[in-house]
Amino acid sequence: LPGRRGEDSGFSRKIHRDGRCGEASGFGGRTEVPAAYTSPVSEGLAVLGCGKIGEILAAGLLASGWRTADQIIATDRVPERVVELADRYGIRATTSNLEAVREARILLIAVKPTDVDALLAEVAAEVTPAKLVISVAAAISTSFIERRLAPEVPVVRAMPNAPAQVGAGIA
Image (cartoon, rainbow, N blue to C red; front, side):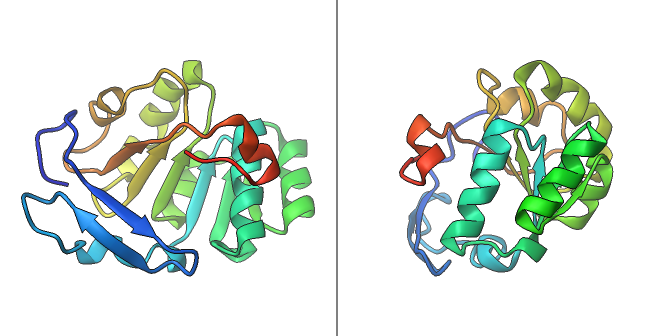
């Protein structure tokens, strides 16, 4: 995205329930959405750290139809939790963050804030500018993440709210 790293690029867009992108602003005065960002529905999603918030978001994406089970791969450190997630949602689940990052274009960082640095150190070599990184880790800035990844990797921070647990939240 244009602009210096760590600064707001002014990018905004509306994504319709069917995945179509609506009006956009930003991009240095242009109003079109770059091709890399026009079709988010078909892209694979990795939920890195599928604890409470990661599970809520994955379940919400499945329930809304914005993702199908075969488009989501989730990670957790505990092998029993991996089996639980796969059984409950029909998604792919693994203990390997690297495997998940290699298989998905959209990466959702949902680990505890204290684990973000270690996660990024583990996966940074696999995170290219062709991937989109979304963080829901509290108190972790986009610039913190950007400094640990290759230049030009798009990074977005979102803070879902409590009603997300019942499918009524916003970020």
